[in-house]
Each structure stands twice: as C-alpha cells, then as structure tokens.
Image (tube, rainbow, N blue to C red; front, side, top):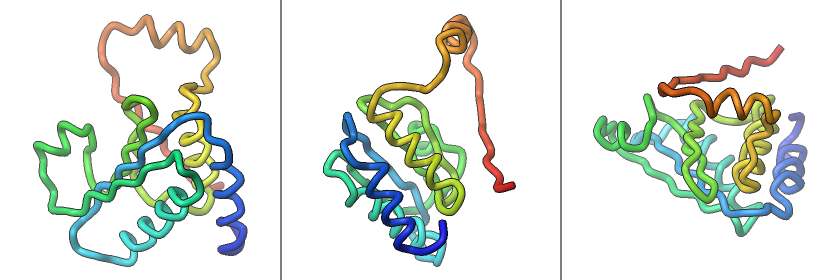
Length: 140
C-alpha cells in the first residue's frame, strides 16, 4: 500500500458486488489509543464500501466470560462472520501487506467459500477432535 488513495481504491474494488452479508465485530479497549483509532478508521472505510457489511464496535474492558463465548483470546480482535460464524478471528490491524488478504477473507465469508481444495475439505471433515489453528502473516 503506497498512499491513502491506493488503500481506498483497493477497498472499494475488493468490496464491490459482495455476494452476501458480512459482519465485522471489533473488540477493543475502552481506552482510546492511536492503535484503536487506526483500526476503527480502517474498519469504517471497509464498512462504507458496501451496504452488505455491518460494523459493530465493542469497546470495553476485558470480560473473560464474554470473550470465551465469542471465541477470542485477547483484544484487540476482529470477529468476521458471514451468514454464520465461521470461527474467523483476526488479531492486529489488517493494514499494509495484510489488507488484501483480509479483504479476500471478507469476500470468501460473503460468498460462503473457503478457497480450499476439495481434498483438503474432505480431510478436515474427517477430523473428530477440535483443533486450534493460527495463521501468522509476516511481510517478507
């Protein structure tokens, strides 16, 4: 991402013609910081890009019971839901190199598709015990 205009253009193009509804729930501290402001501005610009995106900001103190119900391990966190909760949790501001991947994830949730190959889906469906999977993205 070079400039603000580049980011705005990327968001507009990625959110054009979303096939379904998506809700972004941001769990953040009730103490305003540059970090929470940056995340809010970015999420608001994503939500403005499509009438099929709902943004819900949950700013408050850590509530371990609520967070356990929601399925987040820490804040700030973004819960991304399509027509149902797919368990997608994002930690950190999805900006810079991570923005395009985050926008692709929104599109996938809206389209109800994982992007996984058929054999991968079959292998995952064969699992009998719950697993915890985290994916870390680092710029190279």
